[in-house]
Amino acid sequence: MELFDIVIIGAGVIGNAVARELSRKNYTLAVLDKEADAGFGISSRNSGVVHSGIHYTPGSNRAILNIAGNAAMESLCRDLSVPFIRTGKLTIAASQEEQAALHELKEQGEANGVPGMEMMDSATMDQLQPGIAGTEGLYTPSTGIVNPMALTIALAEHAHLHGVSYRFLHKVIRITQVQDSRFQIESETPQGRSALETRMIINCAGMHADTIAKLCGYHQHTIYPCRGEYYVLDKRLDQSLNLLIYPVPGTHSSGLGIHLTKTVEGNILIGPSNEYIADRMDCSTTSEIMEMLKSEGKTLLPTLVTSDFIRSFSGLRPKLTPPDVGGFDDFVIRYQPACDSVIHVLGIESPGLTAAPAIGKKVAEMAHHILPVSEKPWRPDFPDIPGIYRRPYPASMYSLDERKALVDQDPDFGSIICRCEEISLAEVRSALKRMFGPLTYAGIKNRCRPMSGRCQGGFCMPRIAHILNGEWGIPHENHMLKGPDSVLYTGLLRDGE
Image: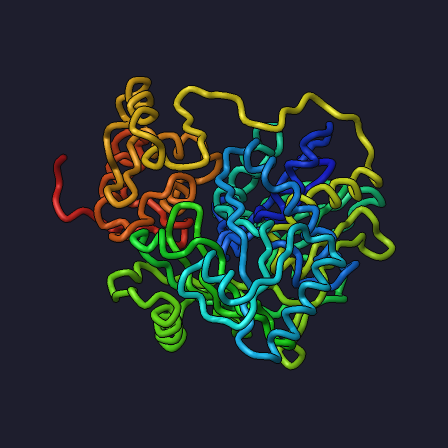
């Protein structure tokens, strides 16, 4: 039976950040995830905001790790070729009551060490964002945006480059302590049961972290799923929003309110809503919330038309506060009582994405304290590999001269697979080469953005199917959207080429 020094359960942004930090040292490492790829859980279903730190109680894990993660994000994204922009954010008060709450946020931000904050009147706010409505605003220039899917995947790929083994489609079902210094982990896989042994377990299972904790004999926390729904707007509106616009959150709210968020690729998000639900796997969207978001969007951006709403999606928060309490609890990052070979990372909701680099370092330090080993050769960025395209943005977002240079290197950069996003054949091939788990359409989309534009795959999906079938030899009946439970094709309409 395989034996690892450390097994991380969960290949979301937190699990991958931990794996990357641990890959600096001479551990044997494995990451288990029940999905077919990194970031297929809650890590990629959010606004992609890198928060400043004004919203969190001074001295809490959320505040400390948010500030540290924000400070580390720019260099991390540069090393991993992930897009990151410091947009700044305005938190807007619309009444005297909200103005008082806004000043409390500023005081809290000062206690947390948030840099560069500034109170603004309506005239000053209008200079930053014409047409903004509000009596007073708090400007936080350290707020930024990142592509959460790109960051999650890049962390995983970098960890894998440095020797971390990833086991996708491994749903952990049993954990047994077989010796004082070893655990046996059993998983369900498409091929049947699988087992391995490890000296240490790090639980980063996101929405299911309490389930994994219970398998380890730790029953102190329960996760309550809270769903937030979003609309994605067309890139036509890219210049409509200069920075992020947030309302003042309510005292007992379980979120930060419905807001407009720029994305690094140029789309705008409206959302999220905020609703406790029973099913921790339910990422559906609802007609009632969509109508509400559409109405809110037209109020905030009066030029919106129906065709600007190109997609909806929802994300889930793994909250540790039940519905009758609401609000927020602190991140739980701790050794299991009486068993310091198990580390639990629970309740990592917002600002989990921002805090991920700092959480990765904190948990790696905790692991090394219990299981010390030596360091090994390690580079913070990716090497240049033929056929692999690693830049923060799709080739279409660079200058004409840069695109011509790419075409000169590889003519497939001039062959367009996705018309909406102008994604080339070379970029799709690069995405396929980067994947070290099952090949899925969602995995391709998350790496290079085909199927993300106005037609949502109507033009590019048949071309991607042809690439998978012809170049990669994957028969159509094995083409998957996200895994074995989402096979896309049942047969052919006609035979032949």
